[in-house]
Length: 441
Image 1 (spheres, rainbow, N blue to C red):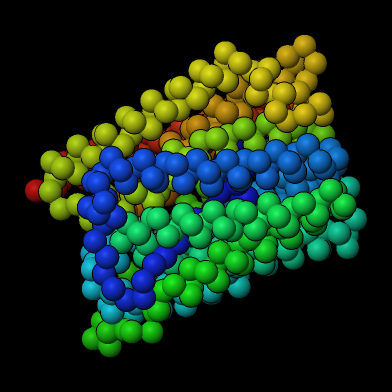
Image 2 (cartoon, rainbow, N blue to C red):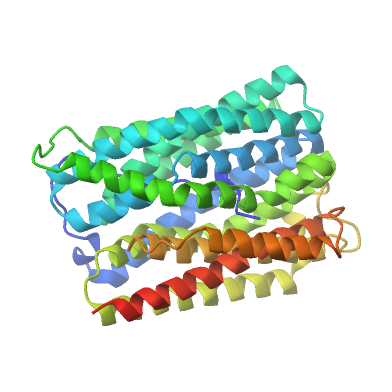
């Protein structure tokens, strides 16, 4: 299961059109830069983790099941409404860096392209949410309200994620983190209303206010009006559409595969199982500190590398470091499952360790998806795109074979079933990167 979407947030910005030197070159070098980044990131993810646990412990099992479905559809909406736009923007902007006027023209194309996808797939997400919430016994009016909030959060998050490309490329991450921390604090304050109204809608309103506030802040810090009229907009549009067409089947497919746990239990299982799945997956949010380092610091640096040897060395370093972090994380969960389960409260801590196995399986599955996301981002930052049918056919064949021997009647089986997808994707992305490295001069 993916780390819950609402636990992660990006933001940022600084200066209007000035081209900044990387922050790491100021005030003490890379070690000081990383120390400051980690301290702020730990604070940010700590606040988000506190918000998530607060929601888990406060909502009833049924309410938390609806909340889990809502944040799952939020994650699905973010993927479907993007369909490669963010990756294409990072790739094109990385090539044009540091010419901000040209990059601003590219942003105009990116926003126009993404709004079209939002109008189409926002409706699909809304309808799917109504179906799953209905299966989990949510009243129709409440379901409409929940999914309306999900669509609104998706809109602000999509706009925010696009603008976050600029501070990532500039490495202006101090201001970026201050914006996200202020958004997290805003969410925490608004979330206090859950003590008076312990409902899914209250938790989603807090997320909406926080995301809208972050989107407003980053938009205020960046002026995109200074555009280079000499930029071949037609060629940029063609590249965006080319990436979107190649990514559309994969985005739709992997959107479903990435959230398959909740989709299967939401349709075939019970609200209690959905709530348990969402609560146990909340622990995976601890991985977001490391994930944020890669997304905000390392990925933009990788996208602008020109030397083949340096590119290969950084690729192996990033993947190796991330695997070490995940190994430590899973080892701690295996040694101290009772401590982690106790964080979730009495409704999910289990009796006699009965949820310990599910916890390890869910965290292991989440780790696979995080590794898949890292490899995907590394490849996409260089526009290394594989034909999506390879993963689709392989994954579906393996899942069909597994269905012959396993029924989808428990959390453990659903998690193992859905984990086939990231395993296949990881294999494909590694092979794809190896092939492209061999072609580089």
